[in-house]
Amino acid sequence: MITALEGDIQHNQGVVSLNTSFISAKKSENNFEIICNDGNNFSINAKVLVNSSGLYSDITSKKIQPLDQKYNSPIYYAKGHYFKYSGPHPFHSLVYPLASEFSSGLHVGFDMGGQIRFGPDVTWVNVIDFSFDESLKDYFINSIHNYWPDMDPDKLQPDYVGIRPKLQNSNEKMKDFSILGAQDHGVDGLINLQGIESPGVTSCLAIGQYVAELV
Ligand SMILES: Cc1cc2nc3c(=O)[nH]c(=O)nc-3n(C[C@H](O)[C@H](O)[C@H](O)COP(=O)(O)OP(=O)(O)OC[C@H]3O[C@@H](n4cnc5c(N)ncnc54)[C@H](O)[C@@H]3O)c2cc1C
Image (cartoon, rainbow, N blue to C red; front, side):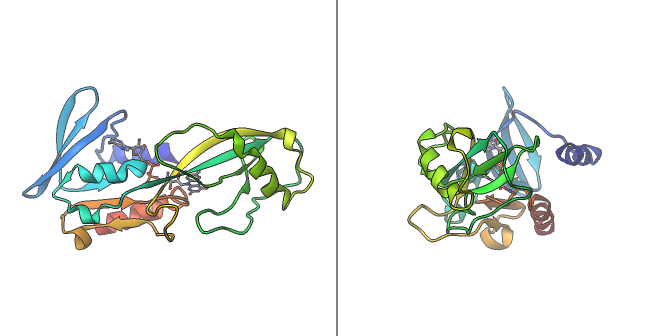
């Protein structure tokens, strides 16, 4: 799907510029002057600027002039770990335990090879660091045993981690994602997306359509 979407961009005379950092943007008259770096600094002019930089959306927002910083939400980091299970299992479909306030629970999912994995948990962290905390294994075992008592802990192995960009800290009430356009912050042509966490991939086409409508 991603390759097809990239093809759509290119067929519409767009360019996908990989390994390129956004440095800053400044609006003058009708255009943003956007400074990028792909090894060298260069600038592009654009009528529209969409900030969808995930975990870095608050840092990016600070570098967009003249965005009033009261429309920039600080991003908090909630790490999610997955453990994979190597062995026979009774599952044929996804199983979701009841959700908590910050997470949809340690659910059973399948990878492309049909192997199952459990996760994600919620571990609040202060820095973006993708190391795996293996000490969570006992917590995973207890949680999975609630709905699969026969699960063999020896077959449970660390798989991978991801980090959610949260708009609230661990001691605050759940906040929903935010998509702000000119009608909110007053900067014509700027669409600012923050806190796009799960199910951001599943809903990415709908989000894209909504952003296109704002534009
Ligand atoms: C543990 C976990 C489990 C999840 N499970 C699901 C799920 O089951 N289903 C689902 O639909 N979603 C799931 N999600 C959510 C999903 O991954 C996100 O919603 C989605 O990736 C958000 O897409 P995005 O494009 O907004 O941000 P991202 O995917 O974070 O992309 C942002 C991009 O911006 C780039 N960037 C940042 N700063 C700069 C800069 N200065 N210059 C250039 N580029 C920059 C980054 O490199 C990155 O490529 C999960 C997330 C986590 C963490």
